[in-house]
Image (cartoon, rainbow, N blue to C red):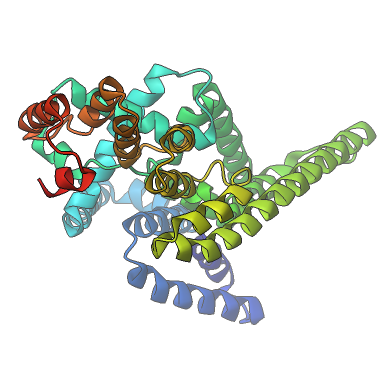
Length: 395
């Protein structure tokens, strides 16, 4: 996001007297060029490339138009060569981490199915992993899937596409409204000639297509600042009533940010306590772990990993009913099938064999040897020939 800003400032000043902003922009570009390759983020490379092409295109637009007008054949040949080179580059980027790219394509496919199930209202931001997991389970249950999809499937916390993430969480209308605001802000900024900020906004929008920047407060803050910086220039702030309205909106937004900060502070404190308490869980001292986890459960109710550890610790303490209550809350914010595994074991311990079969058989959907595993499990459940739970694990 910073690279197109620095590039714009450098292009604007390179023909004039060299000042401090000129050297700062050069230093910024050099530092970012050191970081980008080392980060191995293909999404970041593409975002930086697209935003840089936009900034350079706007800076040299007169020269480009003149060249196209007077050298049409050469321009067409040049465009064809660039198109081929871009295709080769994209193919190389795809082959660099092929399984990762296939995984993202599969996630987008399942996410699109998730959106189609509830396109208007959404399921809530914290419930996206659970909704995704349910959609993936339904997809594999049909049996119409490829070996590659079976290989790359998992239980992701994000769908690696913020547009689909927003659509799943809050519905398609909210997504369209957000796109309208960002597109309108970029159009205004483009008309005002602030190509550096427009390039930064474009970079974030491209990056959000194949990653999850909105999961981090820094990126959300940057997005808000860029939208305001691009759009505020056309606001009629000289009018009294508009200044009043703008001030009220700022106050309301500031209060919302402060309230959200307070909530996050509580979650951060709880996470710190969880980090300290995890040594009990990891060392097998489940009684002490449960006592510590119970104190922060209210603040950590949206954290799937915490809820799983809490429920698993209760399972180890042979408190299946309470464990299932915690794990079913975890299912609302996670698509991890291991949660169903522990729930199934709890149901088995409570002698609810039908519920146990239902939970454990779900784990085998999409497994090549799933039919054999299900038959073996059903025989075991009916005959109950193993009295100790550890015998089943060894078997």
